Length: 173
Length: 181
Image (cartoon, rainbow over all chains, first blue to last red):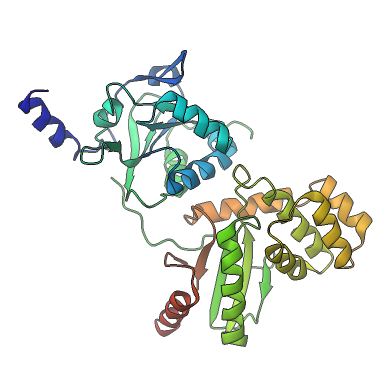
């Protein structure tokens, strides 16, 4: 990596994407043979939950809570995606252990590229921030929040952001 | 990035709640808890001690927050406590569950119902119909709205308590809450 590029990336990590910014597209693996791209979700809101690592206690609680709230997210027509730099095999084992019913994407190679694109990469730790993004049906970020790494941000902010979307289409639970 | 304000209890304590202690108590402590959560199991004894120390100055409220994907027995345990509550024995079951956290499967829940002298045909019917599942879900969602992110989460006089759930820290927080009134 050139020094300039390196500097650029360190600079990038401090600028978390904000409401009004277009959500950068991506295509990451959820299983060995399945790629998930943001584009696939066009037409409905998406919740992106970046988290530092599978298995760490806070992540586990956070993902368990979101798993519990899938019916609420569905009622608001929104899809939930978890992203970390862990590889797919790690994700599969974690999802199976915690019985998670939403995709975990591997931001694994090049490491953290998607987190960097969202300004949610922790260069010094080599993992993503604990960052949440609510993206509307047109692919624009409507809400973002970065939690201290050790703090589970809960879901109240996500629900409030989804409910504030102008063109929300509620479907029966 | 959006900052979050101090988290407040969104659903005020009311008639639907399970309450111990007088309405006019200067301190209201609300717990969002999960019967299978080991940290709630520890907090159970802290709450008992707080109740002993504060007596009639404390009103305690328990709301359900079962994280069923990590705690497979939590949902039925919560339903069992509600079913016992329908027969006037919520707190007896609540206490019993926290004192037997390692044995929360359906067979044990039935055994506890029998030990508490509940009408078993009614209890079994309530359990098989999941009669109180919707109420438990309401509790959980009310917690999510005020930023409950795991268990146990406490609110002291309507404000979320983010400190450690040990006796000294909670006594200090309660003193502060009362002093600020």
